[in-house]
Image (cartoon, rainbow, N blue to C red; front, side):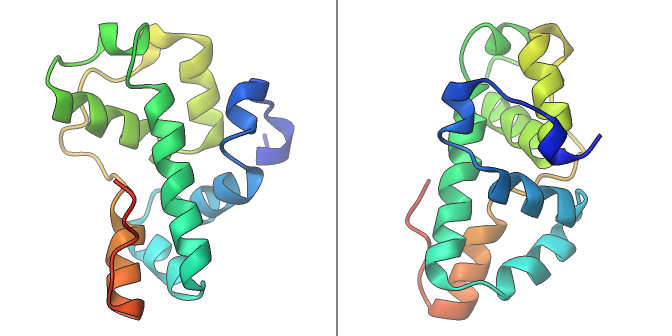
Length: 130
């Protein structure tokens, strides 16, 4: 199933665009690939990517999703970042059934923070979005 075939609830589609999900899909859960993609972008686009990543993750950091994750604030953030990192299809599956969310993100590839890293590398300053 392609990204454009997956329909997310309107309130999420308004804050997280297909542009964002296509970047995640292209990175294929690989941090180095995401770095390559982001290095080709201007500062505004990197910041937009960071904002949308956090917006998508924020949806998963509250109940009912948080009921099925480890209880620490860092743990909840990491699990939400993991779900976003795995792409739109997986994200939609978790939205449909919160019980499927991973309990922990331990030993998993998380793509969060790479936009900030590349922004510092290219422009000498962070995205400022945390």
